[in-house]
Amino acid sequence: MHVRRLQLTNFRNYRQAELGPSPGRLLFLGDNAQGKSNLLEAVYFLAAGRSTRAGADSEVIGWATEIDVQPFARLQAEVERGAGRVQLEAVVAGPAALPGGAARGGKRFRVNGIPRRGIDFVGQLRAVLFTADDLEIVSGPPASRRAYLDAAISQADRAYYAALQRYGRLMQQRNATLRRMKEGIAAPDELSLWDDAFCREGATVIAGRRDAVLALAERAAAAHAELSGGAGERLEIAYEPQLGDEWRGLLPAAAPQAEVQALFAAALASQRRREAAAGVSLVGPHRDDLRIELNGVSAAAFGSRAQVRTAALSLRLAEAELLRGLDGDPPVVLLDDIVSELDERRRASVLRGVQGFDQVWFTATTDAWLPPDFVADCAVFRVRSGQVEPA
Image: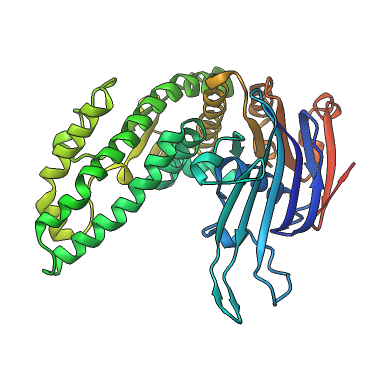
């Protein structure tokens, strides 16, 4: 799988840009704040339907546009896949006050020119993005680890992506009911309006994460053994569903989804009184975590910065291998100025780890950190002020 053409309009600092990348290795060189990371963000946006860097979709819009039109960003790509070529388009529109009233912002997708929902768009292009922020997967809050899992699984499994979206909406509605119960203006039986669907969608998410972590664990351990060389470190990851203390260890390793749903429903029922008092949902996938350990101890609590970075890189390499193993069509790999922060041995291990992928995008401020034979095998581009030119 590889991107054959990328077009950007009003995306970050790119007013208009078009790139026709070839398969293989692409190296984008330039000073900081010139737009290198924005290119990789754009490719990932077309894969995942969202940005990992933006708090809100509208943040990707280049706002230096005419004030009499609604601000927008457009991303378009032609992607070569094992299943055939596909045309992708994502448009992010910002809010605008127009004479006829306020125009709403939002996000729209097209596949081969036909409007599609997010569920039909995400995963048409598969991509794995490595950034300096990946340290958060290991040492950050549980939300960072949930985001890591969700990004990988959503590109691979449309049913999971759909369930995750529905679960989020149901949780908002359920929490609103719990708040009204706490204030004494809603009866407890009103929760039954949401609980069946909440448990059904939540069970899909729980089962999907459980199975994905089992698949990722072996790949991450192998990647870490390569990256850490002879350090003798053992990386282990384990899924930690948040179903309450008394239900924590009861999730079977290979239980069917119906059994997972029944377990989630029982855990939810046991928390009913506490949830009503708190006014918020206390158990479920929205509180899940991923345990990451080195030689049996927490990597976040006891690992050095180098060990945490190596563990994070191992998890990304595991994600890439997981996506490649789905149908033999490897994802596009995006490395955003990663190698400059690694020692020579780890740098060489990462470069070996991304061999065998159809297309790998690298960004760097200089090629001094890269082996000359590696650079010679790259298509090299210079990025300056939102302009990309072959070097």
